[in-house]
Length: 135
Image 1 (cartoon, one colour):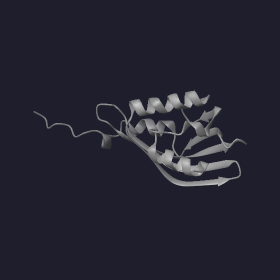
Image 2 (cartoon, rainbow, N blue to C red):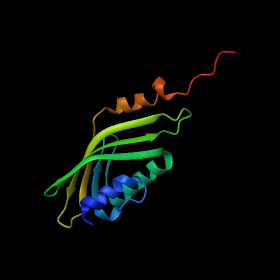
Image 3 (cartoon, rainbow, N blue to C red):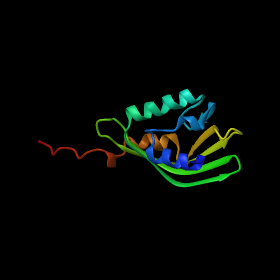
Image 4 (cartoon, rainbow, N blue to C red):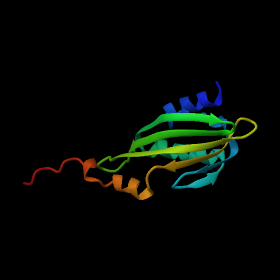
């Protein structure tokens, strides 16, 4: 399998059964919430997601490679473990840089919304179960 085929499988399985070996040991990761270096830290971040969030789905809309640059367009959704279990959805894209060893050396995620927009999804009325009728 080439790198794009592996990424397609990883997106389909996200965050389970990821192929961490396609990332450089000192991979740089950044998204609107965090940034760090290291494949171990990347693996820990995905473990956190897998542990705390429910019904995680990562829909891949497009993937294209030009030389050592890969762009993926996606929508990530999950249920947050709050009593009303809001369904959160973020659409965005990733820009991946591939080094000479054909390993991902940089993974930068961008969102089509703000962090505040994501926070608001946790508290919108449409996410709450109906209130019981007054007694």
